[in-house]
Image (cartoon, rainbow, N blue to C red; front, side, top):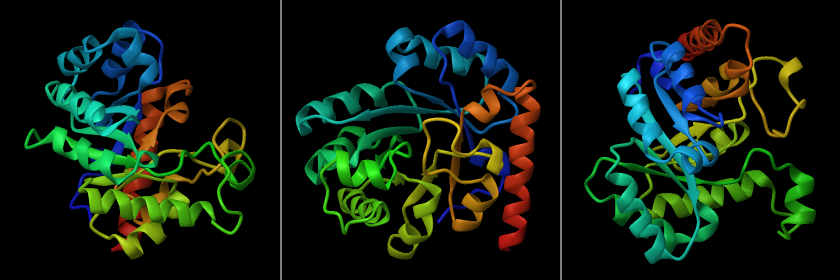
Length: 245
């Protein structure tokens, strides 16, 4: 679906840090090396809208507000209206809330330019979690669930979905006009399986599968040189895009 030509614009850095000072430090280091900054629950609850202002003050990158809203439709609609006033590019709403809630989120965004992304299945969940802890049918795979929820997001008018890179191909086959935003990015096998992320993928494989955006946190944040780490991922994205031409 994407018309994104600049590999850097496809890279979203997750500002998963506990304070405004740390967030600003990373924005200053990475502002010219990534296309967007993601602000999640930890940072937004701690610092509030001030962190969004700080990102704009120190960078030209876009902002992704990752709050994974999940509540009754009226509450979600009003929350999205409030978020839209902050001039951010993306906001997440959990697909598990159902079609009516997702439609309410889209209605809340209105014509503000804010794009709603539906969260399909969190990437820290594996098949055992899905079957044993969440109570879904044993014959329903995570891929099936992700595709089903992508369909709900599409019907509700969402701009795209958050999904594992392992499910991008299946989503593309069914809903090619949805944006696919992929977290759980690890650059090599040594970085896979060592943390709470279970359904992970390399930048190259994700782009080759058709991902529009990659959300990267720890591989950049924990690197000795975060800027160089971001630039390596952008280079890998560029190479993957060349391979798919």
